[in-house]
Length: 232
Image (tube, rainbow, N blue to C red; front, side):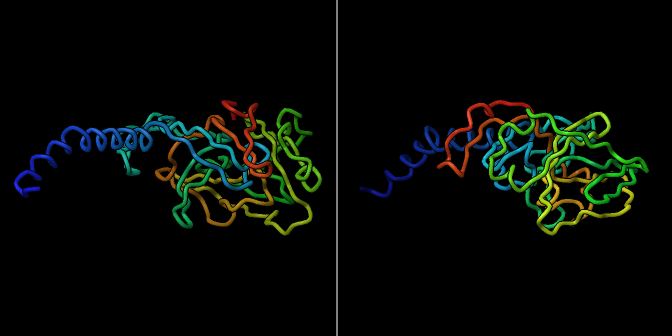
């Protein structure tokens, strides 16, 4: 093959095949970066709300619009509310985490024997609704205790594991402006703001709103069909 013929062939391949493919990949990645994405959940820090093997939908337009592949905001139209589940970059190591917003800017927050006190008012705990626990495995039910935490405006299930060491007492702390206090629903098995501190507003990527897919690692990754497209 003559070298002179290689150039035109490469250019033709670039125009017809490679360039369209790269543009498609760039568009898809930009959409995932700025508009919508999903997040794999490999740990049990949000049980019983989110289980290991869930893939959650992340609405990245819930609060603002960011420049693709950055945390720079082009526009902002809202802020996270207490009780919402969000995806953010951890201030500890930059990893993407999924946790619940418990403390807002200006809140005074403390934890006493796993019971939240917000702005001086103890949060109520009630028996959890069975629908919150329907997918919890028998092995988890045997070692964990569950309650319905009545956050202002948003009730949800929380779990505790009495036999393990955990940070069940914390604070009081005041949440600084432009920062949020995050906690996992599995209170005794969650690396969250009790350990790495509050999260900057700009580090919040979006709101986790639903489970898109779910696969059970303890059963050879069989689908959990009833969790598909279920709300959080």
